Length: 371
Length: 75
Image (tube, rainbow over all chains, first blue to last red; front, top):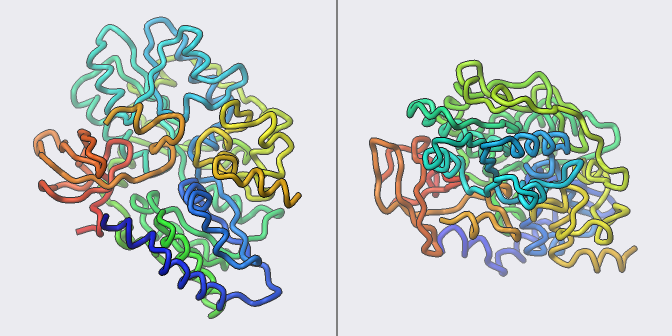
């Protein structure tokens, strides 16, 4: 299969791993963050970290859109879902994210009409099929997903659909990266940049990482060779004393991004002054809400929501995992009280979450042996 | 494509920021929609406004029911 088989070639992988080995200085420790949850998933699915020298460490960033949703936001969604006449729609993994009193899946079991959808268009279709019901779409995700929500909102408005609204929890990628780079408890040597977010935003927004913080970044695809090649690019920059944004995923990511997507996002959304990220706290200008022009389709305007901030469970260390400060298996409840079947923290919900990726691909047992 | 296949408990491709390569089968230019086929044979109606114009047999990268790029590079 084109763009898949050639990026899973074991021989090529070994060759890249050999070049990576030649680039590292013995005695120096390299800490690279993969920003995107999709990369975390691929790294553990394909055992990519096993191909790296022992002194090259991959740490997991805040790029899993499910993992960063705070509990209070889930509670807000559940509150809307329990309203009479409401059909509440959301993506699959979001159903299992714990709120302070259960998940959306629990609320569904308790009688709320909550439906899993694959796209915002599916939610719009449900609204058309149920004109006597209020259909709310719980929009989550980074800039990859936000254009899809924006197009659906434009379509809803153009079609005069009055029973459809969106609870917007979209987030943007640059502010949390800046927050991480400002964090005193995290020393990073470089970044593996998000592939599909960059399809929309392009490579340009990441220029601040080398310019302001002196760190290299390589935007990468999601196949094993993509990630290995990105690691090689970053280590080569370090070895040669360079520091820039490189684009390993050129087959999909243009430097300027998808201009139509950026245009439609600018029309439909505006930045919130601040937005709460699970484990990271409030980050300025990091969340999107519907613009004034689309306020009539904003579920937060249409329905009253509790809007209460809920602290994470004390046992959960998702915050430290999301910042790359600790490995998933270093969390006190990893694999015991917190499992993919009964998650306490969001990182154990989605398979892109660092904890679930570790757990699902057998790292649990191996790392415990190391401990 | 049904939600059950794509957004099940094992792996939610939307939450996972995945891009699914798909082939365009038919295009409804007026509505900016296209019927597309995934490599496993599943069909899905895809929003193509962000990558229009598209033609049958073209390969798209699809996320959350919306094509976000042409596979193989922007034209």
